[in-house]
Length: 252
Image (cartoon, rainbow, N blue to C red; front, side, top):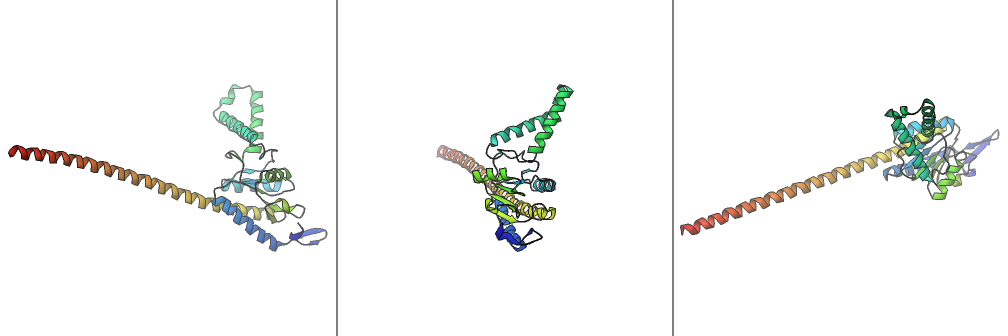
């Protein structure tokens, strides 16, 4: 982190805010492009001061998130994640339909506890069908397992890089204090906002493409109908013409 440190005061490192701004803009542009390309950005922030922020921002832009804990093997053993997510969906559906009432009170209590546990761990990734294309991490020291898994699989990382972290582990480090709520909020809101804008552009482009394709099919249908009508008219005209010829021959 030495290149990002402006100086120190009373033994506390002071991050160069000019560099923070520069790297935040670079990371934001990358996040926006991810959104434009329809790629998945997973938000990860499990420390207390980040949990609500991560959940709220991710839900707002329909992005996956983890804010309780990083489950070991989340990236390197995604089959287990899928299995647990399916279990959570099945149990939740059964509970909503009242199907858990067939169990004893003790069994229902255990199932409720399982639902709550799975919801805490996987509630933010219910729609994630595979590994994300990128991670946004608030504290790379705390989330070292996630960093290791992402690096192993070549998944790029955007992260807040505090003075006690190794920024070289991150593809898009953003110098900042990962403990201060204000710093976390500004950086996370900026990245989420950029990614969300990119997604909007992607969705708009997709909608336009779908409408164009729909119009193309409609136009093709109209052309096909016109061709069929023309053929029917031609057939009728041919019959009429033959009848006229026969009538003319009879008169002669």
